Image (cartoon, rainbow over all chains, first blue to last red):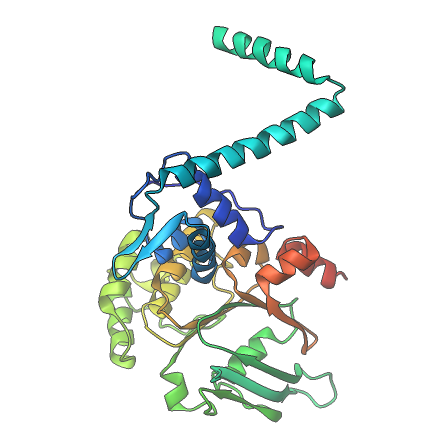
Length: 127
Length: 234
């Protein structure tokens, strides 16, 4: 079992943060497609949260199709690679939208941002 | 729906010349919830807990557990961690386990031994030779080794260091029996708030609020701890 470090913020509903964390683990491949997930109780205990809250997060992930319950066998990550990739793409899109907003606030034009990305990327690779 | 605990106008006064400790509490607590009983010192938390356990009797009003007033049948389904220890300090930890096993049908010796081992507590030690924090851990292990319907923990982590606190909370999560309700009284809200389904705020013996924890976070946009500080500013 992979041990996650759960960073939970008490100002926001816990279950939605659990959904985000688990979704990230699935999208990043830490929980590979088709792999079995730990039980609600195990994950709840690991994260220091209420099992009912973890259950609610699982229900939400099931609704999105990212995890599925096989009767008597437990919960598994979906084997639908297309779905996982599309959610990954969606999350990347959100990050980029955020990023472009911030760059706009700093006064950069679209073209400038693109060339800045290239030059910072090259600087990083040199290090 | 069948409630685990129901109180109706529960009222307790220790001294007629003074304000009551509990001023007519009416609420219904279901099965399968982890509930924080929160309030400042002297708000009536321990009085409420003692009434549920039948250690004191109400001045007026009533409390029932599974529809029954406090009696041997209700005590058999409640696992209670009192605020102050009631254990014989010259007993060894292993003897206490035997004592609890004799007393309660639902006590699991195996569970207790596993928890003690994972907390690094020597079963052959006498209670009085242990530190305050370790004694608290032993008590909690004894209480959580029962498979009760209701666990009542009165200030369970007050004397324990923060690292052990996390571990203890995890112990609570992994060991309480399914469909049981846990009622935790504490003022260390930030340590336990991620664990709670619901919170009960009481002040001066009155019920201020009984609501789901997630709903409060959503509505108030702040942690329970921050909200508590706001509600109970002096």
